[in-house]
Length: 385
Image (cartoon, rainbow, N blue to C red; front, side, top):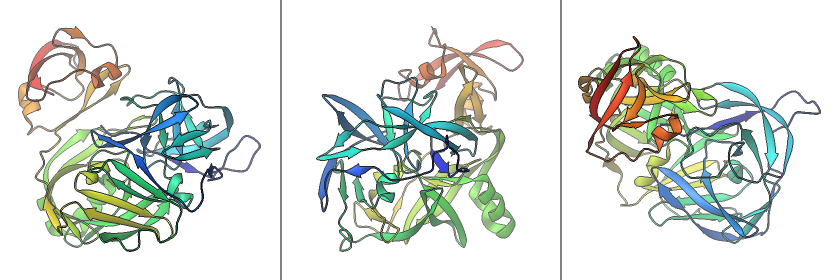
């Protein structure tokens, strides 16, 4: 599942409109602070303190500002106006912008931070709010090291200049960073650096179709096609469309090569996700608009050799459903079909998509799924999650 990504457009200037800004303040100047982080399920979390209470924030570089949830317990202070936003799947909505209370991370206190207010948090898995890329747009450089479980944050210009690594420049598109990468020999794709996305790389359908037209041999990277939807953004699941299952010989980010990588296409933007932090740390340099990848093992390449994601579940009303399945997959052979609604797992009724997301699946175990097909029939399937 793709965690939500939110980016902001500046709207016509009216009394009720709010434009993107980084007017928040940081309590220190000329500082270097080492902030503890957690890295779980390819997501970055850090602890924030408000008065005598702690909250868990998700660090999402694909979100231009923060995000809070109307059905959550995070205590935003006031509404500031409305803004037009696009989520990861390109769906547009006009939403409220709110102000965070003063909060502390590490030794720093941040005042006047803002975020969007979403009505629901369908992908919520244990965090209270989001910190966005405006931390970097404010002029703060950051080094994220998942192995050491720290984020080094500084306002000192050129602080990381003497560190090595594989550098690539980013450009801001709707206030979030986008880098040029090569998913195949000769192909250049622009991908959003989005730590709210879990996978190392997903390719937009638009890019895939362009590559197929431009490079005759690109079809060798496609191991299957299907039709469905898999990504869930801030405003719901993407629209159904053709999905390609890709087996990339090599993926180049800067001059670093990731080999033997399975991924698929999406209806939204191409994205580089937080899975990259399994292989090295990332430096974000706002002054030079650079992203620097530092492999943990000082190598120039690695073999990923991951397995293909061949089934995806999305909400259908309140219940989970099969949004996408590859006919060559074991899940298909076990009996899952496009559009199946999950009614129960191991005899336990499932009433919400959130309940499905938090179900205690056991890796390697075959679970019993009770499903309702698109023709209304009820059947039982045994399969691994």
